[in-house]
Image 1 (cartoon, rainbow, N blue to C red):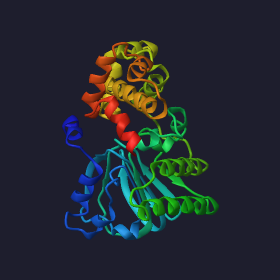
Image 2 (cartoon, rainbow, N blue to C red):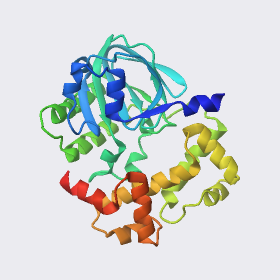
Image 3 (cartoon, helix red, strand yellow):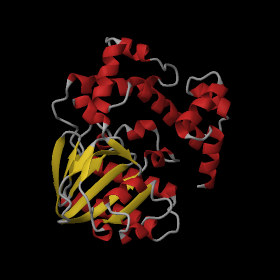
Length: 306
């Protein structure tokens, strides 16, 4: 029965989530611009709050809520969190969350950004691995000192200005401020101290190993051998924790590495294919299009236009 419940958890894109839980006729939709599916930052009182409770769901974007007054309650993963003034709650992309109480008794900021935004000029995988709160296995709640809260507000105000006062937000500016925001938050984080299950520990180690070896090894068997478990046990553990197979995580990591290279280098598609362990660049192009809906060349052209 538990497995069936997990399968019913829906993953929402940004626009679909807003239409579902803010209501299709809500005038707040006018605040969301053409690129808001990839990024927006608004004050909570501007968007007026949810119209409907949110059942267990997932989102394709990272969502950050900073509370300046009142309190906000939501469940992230399997734990319920109450967030109050000078506290942040982060829902990483792909994490299960739910909200029962939609009464708006809080103020603050909501900042939502697609993981692809963090691929641009100023980021890399090693930097992003520093931020525990962006990981599904991490601690999603951060309490800030009054001094650091003021710094967070300054950055969120700048992000809000970039989103609200420009026709199309400059994603290089957005990325730079988001990374500054993450480092400010990081000064106050406590690495997750919850009692992790064996499956969660194994999954965390597996994902670290993928990033270290993705340019060379793409087989679940290889990672299982490094972790001294069977491929079946590794896959079951990863699936139980993330609701995705070990092979899916490998494929997603290949795609992420390829996107970094397409964005940050002038390497040809053939050279990028070699960099991510695909000697056959035609196979790599088919793999990329199957997962992204566009070819690597089309993806690079989209970057050039942004």
